[in-house]
Length: 177
Image (tube, rainbow, N blue to C red; front, side):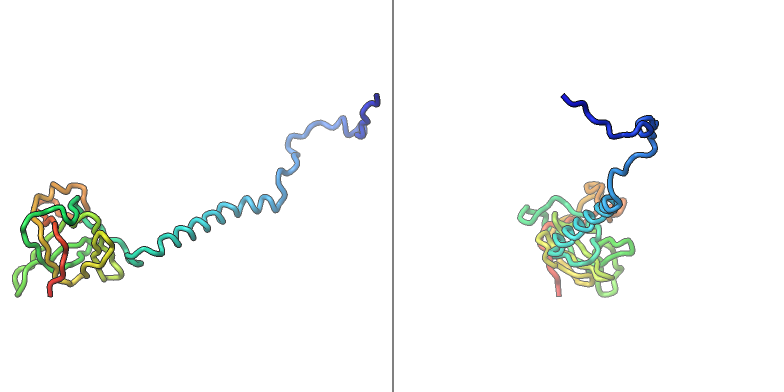
């Protein structure tokens, strides 16, 4: 049997191991690909999210914080009439301006049915129902049925006063002429 041939010279065999001189694991092209790959994945993911959300019916506006209850259409309700002009305050909270014919305008803070949303596009407010249909815009006089209850019932909901009563919307919202 033949012995393996050692092709290293005696000087190469006697070289001490240098732990700081390791060969590169990747080529320069490999390192460039590894550096660019996370950005490429993020760009693709952002594109997918943009395509998926392109069909959103609420448009390109800013979502407004809107207090909602668990009431859904068809769930019965109280018989009180709630009316006012739909407004948006400086904190981007939706309220109803009550009072007419020069009377002292009061603010009614409604709690909307489940699924309702509000969107602000510039200074234009749009109120949407649970199906995403436009119900009213700021400045519209709206009318709906429901009742009134203590604000503490809706603790944790945005845009409600600290004390007093709120209007609980329990019907379809209609725009009065």
